[in-house]
Image (cartoon, rainbow, N blue to C red; front, side, top):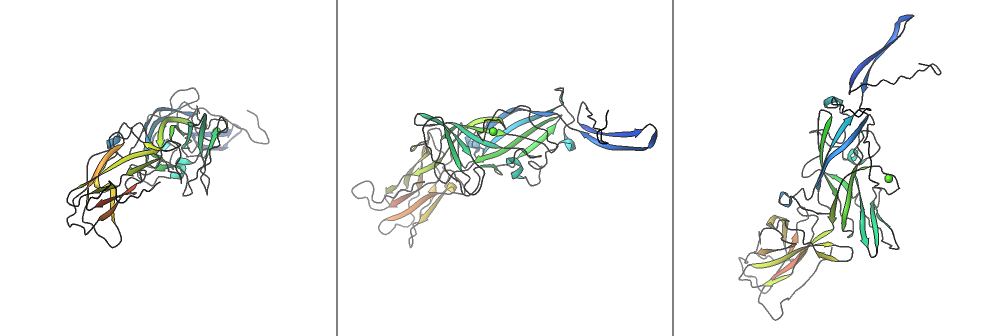
Length: 375
Ligand SMILES: [Ca+2]
């Protein structure tokens, strides 16, 4: 031991996490000694048991291979704490766990701590979307958290000039508090984490992102971090996160066909889930589970009119298509009765859509009144 400018540094290594006290004294005058309580921390974490559950808001969609932008999906993973000799530090549990902000049991979850990276007590969640094919090029979509535009920019390997898209309302990458808040359980030096996360819809259609990578950079309050990083979310050439997994996210809408029929019969209405493939909206044949329940739709009358009809339930989408129905009006409308059917944006905010339904005397031609709303 040597002193430099009156200061000597000790490095004490303990095999496991815990508190211990250190007493230092001079042999010549032991009464002048000092003691201090120290906490041994892990050397690093490892990441394992990663999983992604798409469409976690809909139990009927368990096993879905894709999700919609603006819809939560659940990520789960384990962190294991190790000492410098690669021996598990099994005492890292209970009060020795130095993650408080991202996950605090029943108390409020600090969502900023889930997104922040490189800060003590943070989780560093972010996403990046490579493999976005544009013409003959392959691009990577990079999501910025910077206000005011929260820009999504595209880095392409050829001459494609993909214009950035914004989400002015806020960052696209967020932790979702629904259907459940994030959770964390530590036992024997191993922590099991779960969180619902989301890529918000941009102000206009983008994607589809068929290889969206989800990464984290957990760092506890003592600065203990992962040993291996394999994801470069900001595309600066250096990995700063570890990949939890890869999934598909699509910018969707529900096309509600305009319908016309007799006022003496229920009126079927065809619906179709679509997503933006980079050039056009196409049928999302992978959607075989979005529920077509009455509560997901709103009927709106035209000003000054009231058509006594209601939306009937008819199951789920199948291969992207399905059908809802309006009941026979309880009072026959005078002349044509027109209502607008909309997706309730509090129930299916990721599949907006609207169409018109017309009850009335059938005339020549299948459609008397047509209006399309594009999203
Ligand atoms: Ca980087």
